[in-house]
Image (cartoon, rainbow, N blue to C red; front, side):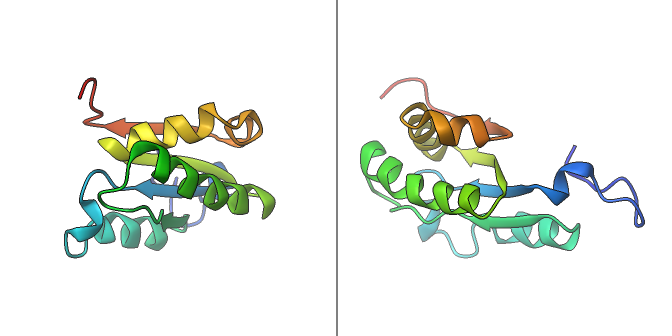
Length: 118
């Protein structure tokens, strides 16, 4: 659960995790897309960010874009926890599948409305 355990007791993962929101197809073109969850996570004390991907980029292009972003999180001593929507979920899974060290450092990935076919 991402919510804090209470005002005095943050969730134990907050000390080591960075929540990474990954938008789906065209998500970055939607005004303030993912801003409300990002702001709420930060208000709860979670280190969090929205990954930068190309709204209409290919799966492989966005995979290549995500890898260095994930690597910077891991290099900073943090463990990524992904919340990914649609095509963004596929891009995260491809990035992690291609880099076992980043996959091993990852806490988890929650995907929503992930496509199954073209």
